[in-house]
Amino acid sequence: MPVVKLNNAYLERLTRTDIRTIRNNLPMLGSEVEREDEEQTDVQFFPNHPDLCSAEGVARAMRGYLGIETGLPTYSVKSSGISFSIDPNLANIRPYLGSAVIRNVCMDNAMIESLMNLQESLHWVVGRNRKKVAIGVHDLDKIESPFSYIAAKRSTTFVPLDYDVSMTMDQILVEHPKGKAYAKIVRNQQLFPLICDAKGRVCSFPPIINSELTRVTEDTRNILLDVTGIEPRAVMVAVNIVCTAMVEMGATIESVDVDGITTPMLAPAVRTISVAACNALVGTAIVAAEMKNLLERMRFGAEVVDTDHVRVMIPCYRADIMHDHDLYEDVAIAYGYDRIPASLPPTFTVGKPHPVQVIYSLVRDIMIGLSYIENTPFTLTNEKVSYEMMGRPENSAALSVLHPISEDQTIIRTDILPMLMESLSINRSRELPQKIFACGDVVQNLVTYAKMAAVSIHAAADFSEIYAVVDAFCRMAALPYEVRGSRDPAFLDGRRGDVYVAGEMVGTFGEINPDVLVAFGLAHPVVAFEIDLSCLL
Image 1 (cartoon, rainbow, N blue to C red):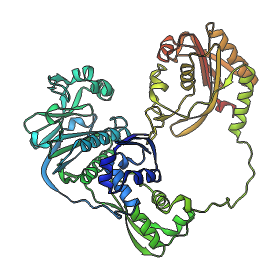
Image 2 (image 1 turned 45 degrees about the vertical axis):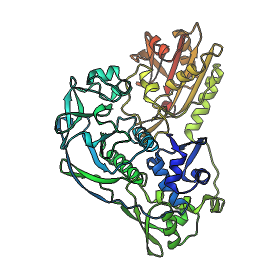
Image 3 (image 1 turned 45 degrees about the horizontal axis):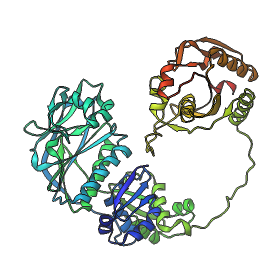
Image 4 (image 1 turned 90 degrees about the horizontal axis):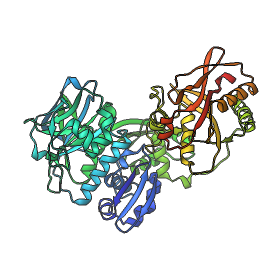
């Protein structure tokens, strides 16, 4: 989860109450206080609530929860007269752009730090580490409209932020810290996205780095916001969150014409919800008027329609509201979970083992009998461990996590073997041999499968050892199998095989490729076996 660094004095000024009261109530907004000191409070918020990734968003929500300022925040947007044009050549590179002009900015160090932290938090929470969305803020008074978002040659030069020498975009990807960190997003493109002003001066190389020309300082009074990306909804979510945070700082927002489309539109969405449905789901016994008041504490607009319905105006920055149940959750937060009575389920059932669990029990008995110890790795992992470190191509069927809590947990596993390799890496200082296995669910193309994997690491580990394990496993599981040659790059060529049952490949085994061993920091040979347990069903 993103850690939001909150300046205590600035947060008190925005919230209009003391830091002790704020800290005592932060957990009720779905946060975990990581660290406290006299100047700063570090807080973790769930990534489905990106509007809370700044002191401004936290203060806005806290004022409502504490009853200091309730109801829907309203935002006035007038036209800036500024326009953007988008190069059609960006269609397959990074095609979407949202923008706004933020005027009457008067920022001190705390405000600038808050804005930069919000930008980086949104890059991770909404932007998937800038791949999906990247945000740029520029000193508008240093550049001239109209602006162009173009597909530029890689040899184009400009002075990147924090540098004083001009560099080509290719050089930036190799030499600049931000270029090295995010080069993989654009490296394979023939042309690179670039934002220029009316005089052709470079403002930004999204999603990598801004130009030093447009650096935002304490003297900045007017800001041009650009948000580029590959998914239009995510782009506008980021635009709305940044703009509404800047309003909390005292700024005003003006719209920009982007190829005939006006952005941002900060009007609320409207939804009508049922009081009875909320009571049935949450376990409360509130009436429509009470629901209205609770929603207003959570900074929604609300109007009673009749005894069972309330019309809700959802602020533009609440990207997490996708279902009526999301609103019922906010009602429960405002009501207080401690006030909801506990009760037993109304039905009684008798369970029985699921067929997959019966298979898992069989697998455990076999592998433990073969002297392997069971390991229980996480279901969530990331592309680097699953594919890059294993020397395998990325699996397009992998299911991504919409709001990952960290860079280590971005996809649901498609294989179990990489998780066991990671376990060996973590325990490489332990004595050898280590022989571990794991069985559990994997997901591909929204379909859940059962898999088992096993690894053995010691100085004498070889192909004959793991072949014997495969043979013993299949015989004890009553699987009539055959072995054919394999091309799995995770294994050493000539010392690998695929397992076939009824003519269908169900597993693979062999000696792990030395390049994979190096990637995981392992100094001894490893042999491994992985099988799809669907063949046992």
